[in-house]
Amino acid sequence: MKRDVIVIIGSGGIGMAIARRLGIGKTVLLADFNEAVLKTAAEELRSASYAVEAKTVDVASRDSVRELAAYAASLGNVMQVVNTAGLSPNMAPVAKILEVDLYGVAVVFDEFEHVIASGGSGLVISSMAGHMMPSLPPEQDKALAFTPTEELLELPFLKGEAIPNTLVAYMMAKRANHLRVQASAMSWGAKGARVNSISPGIIVTPLARHELDSPIGDIYRGMVEASPSKRMAPPDEIALAAAYLLGPEAGFITGSDLLIDGGVIAAMRAGKLPTPG
Image: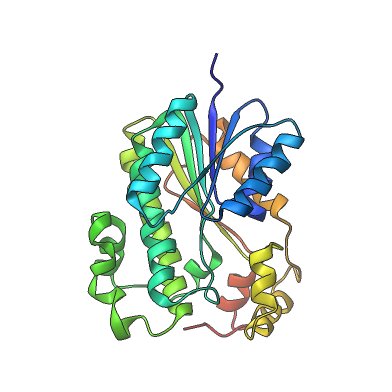
């Protein structure tokens, strides 16, 4: 008898925390672009007695994501899909950030919609950065939500001088995640499934450490100090929220984003922090 399947795309700190919390009794399909990281993560879970399959994936390649979705479906009922893959502003140029963090998220929604089981749920780990930008014109919001995925990166406001740096690219991608979740809630709903996003603040993961140790690290530390909580968070706090949103208790929640940032955006709205851009 096949077990239900949970797919975790991105085997970093948040992905692994969610896998540990939700993978008990299921087949955990781990996927990552980095084969070495993926192998280490899969071995870690197997050593703790999880049932684990592993497959490399490039979320910026539709063929690669389609293969992953088909493999997941071959393992059992695909009940939960979690996409944690992403690049931070200090990790890649503008075009690559948009390709992975914006287009890649839309591709995962598209392809896993075909295999998600009735009663299943999806979750993308977005970012508080999606809440930092001023409101977009309604026509841009609509375009980010509903433009066919293969045409997304050709939108005029995502090209050239409209995206002057990697931070703007990152914020725009994360705003698009929130809008794409709302659009996907409709089509996933037709399959009897739900989809939501979580927008974490500064979570203590290797990616966050990369940012904290970079030239923009002081910006992150300033966010922590200005926030009401005055701390960062471990990945396990995100996993707790993910377990709720992916589980039956959240059956009335779809098309939503949950901001978990310790109050950084609140501090920004209160004028305690500058609005980036």
